[in-house]
Figure 1: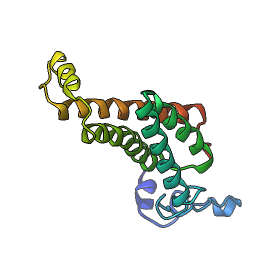
Figure 2: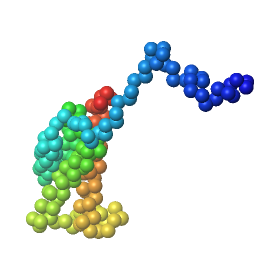
Figure 3: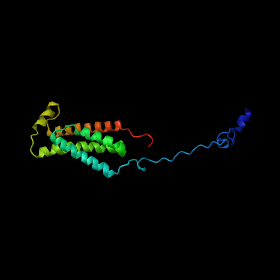
Figure 4: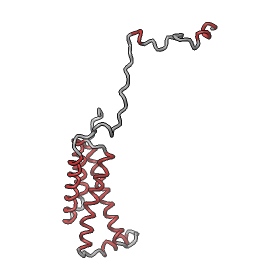
Amino acid sequence: MTADLKRLGKRGAYGLGELGKQGIVPERPAPFQPRFVRPYHRWPSSAWLLGLLAGGLVIAGATAVGWWFMPFVMSLLAGLANHVGRWPTRTALPGVVLMSAAGWVVPLCWSVLRGAPHGAVARITALLGLPGNVAVGMLLTVLIAVVQGMAGYWLGRALTPLPTDD
């Protein structure tokens, strides 16, 4: 026991770190490289933005016709296309939200500016217990479009998950 106490703190006393003598050399870990430094996506930003702009125009046109479900469909397509483009969700989802919102805001504002009757929107918001205001009705409508867009995008991403080796 006293011999062990004399060996405490001495170099090589317990044979720790002698893996090199046995021929076992631990590998050095790869240096950390943040995701924003390395290219993560395959498509250029202009292709993604052009796709979102086209999706917003399709949503706006479909909204003018009365197809209220198009934010979901276009966002689903964006989620499926993201399997190839590989944009991270934290980057792509705000773009999809803007696409969905703009696709409904433009026709709503256009109809109000052209003199469409907007009293029905105010009555619907009053029936919901919200202030009977056109702006509240439009905000609620755009919020529904945003929820549709997020649900469609997440469904598209769930159907085509990204590989885990990246």
